[in-house]
Amino acid sequence: PPPEFAQSLPQILESHFDMVERAVLALPVATALGAALAFRPRRRGTPPRSAPVIQTQIVLAVVGATVMLVVGSSLARAFGIVGAANLIRYRAKIDDPKDAVVMLSTLSIGLCCGVELYGLALFATVFLLGVLWAVESIEPELTKHFELKVSTPDPAALRNDIEPILRRYHI
Picture (cartoon, rainbow, N blue to C red):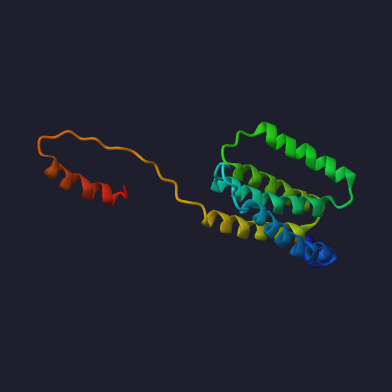
């Protein structure tokens, strides 16, 4: 970075310390409340929730809190965020809902930097990395089920040859 930036960094961080203090409270509270809703007990007859949807709900609460910290009371910032979020929504083909939330997260981090809230951007990035690591660590491992049907004159002998190969590849 340019020397001017390195010299002004302490003043920038000090001037935005209040915002970082607010983020230190807002982001964990948003995470906890988002998790409470995402992990709510399922009522009988409702479909099971998938891990990506639960994770997305938690991270979306963090993104919402970050965006609102950036917006504050600025109507112009609010309209800017809505416009940018719509670009992501309509221009990107996204299969996993978590990817959409990470896109919104990076948007909110970029917004923080754009309005010179570097401390908030740094804290939100580190915090979101931690939340994503935590929610993705509870994600079940993807498995595919298949049925293998083999016809042979000596099934027992062939089974003894095939099973070790399948075990070696965790199949």
